[in-house]
Structure formats: structure tokens, C-alpha cells
Length: 93
Image (cartoon, rainbow, N blue to C red; front, side, top):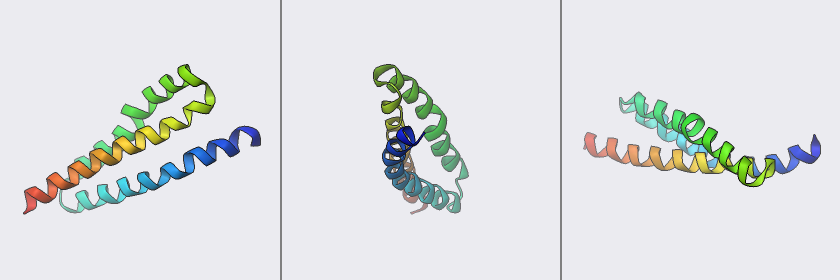
């Protein structure tokens, strides 16, 4: 388990940075009155992108590549949240 877990944590742990930024942006947007955006960015990250990426990366490179699916899904969710935050700020101003 250590042989599989250590490399997995080394790959997954840095993806928590964009995930935390996405969460803060989501809470900010919720505070502005649009909680649906926060829910959509979380769903985008965890369901819409993560599962297909896991299947694709697993088929392409095995279990070692699956961990990179976390990066892809978190970065896409971050972009979605940032664009949504910009849109919300433009609406409010």
C-alpha cells in the first residue's frame, strides 16, 4: 500500500491548492447571492470531469495516470469558478 499511496499523495496533494481556491471563490459567489454557481463548480469538479478523466487516464496509462485526473478536474473547476466570479462581479457593478 505504501508503494501505491506515496506516489498518489505526491500527485494529488498539489491539486488541493486549486481545489481550495475554487471553494473560496464558490463561497464568495454564494455570499453574493448565487449559490447555484458554487454547487455547479463542485459538481463539475467531482462528477462531470473527474469520472470521465479517471476512465480515460486509466485506459491510457494505468493506475499511475489516474491520479492526474484530479489535476485536470480541479483546474477546469477553477477556471469555471473564476469565470463565474467575474460574471457575478460584473452583474453587481
